[in-house]
Amino acid sequence: MPLRRPALPLVALLIAPLALSFGPAGAAPAGIDQNGLVGCGAVMAIQTGSVISATRLTEAGAKDLAPFGAKALARSRTPGAKQAARALSAATIPSNLAAANAWCAVHPVTTHAQPFAPQTFTGTGNTRIRISTRAPAIAHIVMANPAPQFFSVEAQDARGQRTDLLANTRTAYDGFRPINLLQTAVTTRLVVDASGEWRIDVSPLSSAPTGTQGHGDQVLLLSGTPTSMTIDGNDTGGFFAVDAYGSHTQELADSLDPVHSSVRLSPLANHVIVVRAEGDWRAQPT
Image (cartoon, rainbow, N blue to C red; front, side):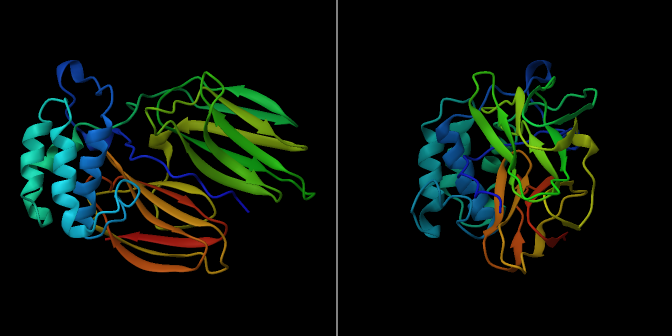
C-alpha cells in the first residue's frame, strides 16, 4: 500500500488554459510569501464553504477565516496584497471575495509550464534518472513486478532532497504521477529502487487526459470552469486522495475509508485533478 503523503503547503499549477497575467514580460511571480499562502487559504476555504483548505494553517473556526486571512495578507509585502486584505476582511460569502480572489489568482506558487520533448526511460534494478525539464509534467510509471518485491520511485531536487514519493509498492504498478507542480520543490532526478524491469515516460502536463473515472493513480485535465465535483472511490478501503489544482491547490479527499461525496471547487483550483488510489474511482466535475 502506498505511504500516506506528507502534508503539503498550498501550491499552484500554471498551465496554458489558465491564461493568467504575470506582469512585465509575462514572467511568472518568483513565489508567494507565507502570509500570502495563509490569506489565499482563507479565500479558498470561504469559496468552498469549508475549512478543508485552511485546517493545516489555523485552528480558527469558519467564522474567523476572513479576518484571520486578511491579517495575514496585510503583513505581505507583495504588491496589491493590502488591497486584497481589505476585501477579504469584509468578506463573508464567496461573492464578496472578488478582489482577494483576483490577487491570489495572479500570485501563485508555481513553475511556469513550458513545452519540452517527452522522455522515455527503461531499465532493470536500481537507477538514477536525470530529468531534462523543470516544467510541470506527468510521469507514467510501469513496473510489472511479477514477484512481491519492493519497488519505489522517488523524485529529488538538485541537492538530493526528496520532492515527492511517486511510487512505493510491493505489487505491480501502472500509474500516472505529477512532477514539478511545486515551485519550491523542483525535481531534477528520479531515483528508482527495483529488482525487475521498469519503464517511465515523462511528458508535458498538457498531455494529461481528460476524463471522469479511472483506476489507480492518475492526473487529469479539467475542461471549462467546474464549480463542484462528485467523488466516489476507495470501496476496498485502501489509500485514496484527490487534489485539485489551478493557481493554488485544494484537497478534495484524503481517506483510508470509502469516499462518496460532493465538494465545491474553488475557482483557484479547478483545472487539474491529481488522484492517488489503489482501485477504481470516479471524479465527476459539474
